[in-house]
Length: 272
View 1: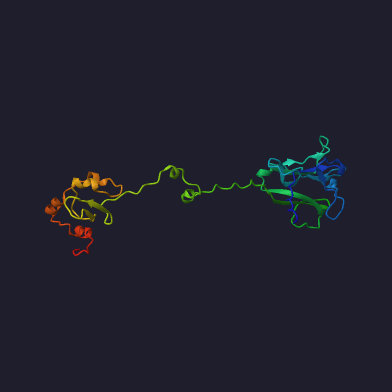
View 2 (view 1 turned 90 degrees about the horizontal axis):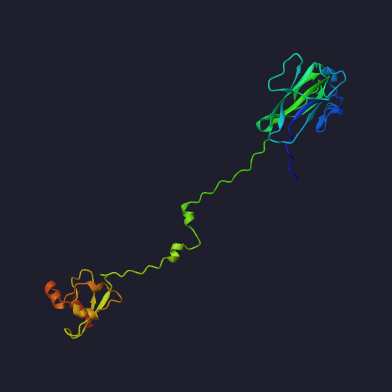
């Protein structure tokens, strides 16, 4: 794939050279017209010895000046504001007058929107496409080509990515707090319908063992004499309970423990 061509550089100066050899290094002399005829403009500018237009093209540095306009005026016209007269090589003697004078407007590249990129000479009868005629001198027409200035823009700065709260919470690493925090132990519940306890009664009942069901809504507590033989796993919640005897419960609540006695005897329940 061929490399992209660099855009042309605007002119950085326009000058006048008495001979093609008089132009300094870095300047290009317009020695011939587009038709190939010698482009000696000395007579048109009032130079007895002849002369040639020359141009310079420098690097596109933001602070370097570039030519944004060219004007050719009579010596009777005042110098336009913002314009400067082109240099001559070699410098003319003092007191030498010119019938025509060439002025250019120079601006820094960073401040210029358009600039002059080329100057050509042709016969008066020929037009050059995409060029603008400046003036006619003798048998030639002076043309210039203008265009927009391409400025190198700084590289774009990527915007910082915004991470949502949900993405921040996603992590493959375990949280430090979760590693140090001990696992929670299940809390034992009292009054569960399926929790059961065994009552050892060796003195009052012939079976000596009652499998009691701690159902919700059963209004009784146990007598302290059964506390030593009472077990509900490792739960110590019953230690602070106010216990009553079976006789106290039967008398106070009119509750005969029929269901419990039937379960203890391993008989089918006849009362539900």
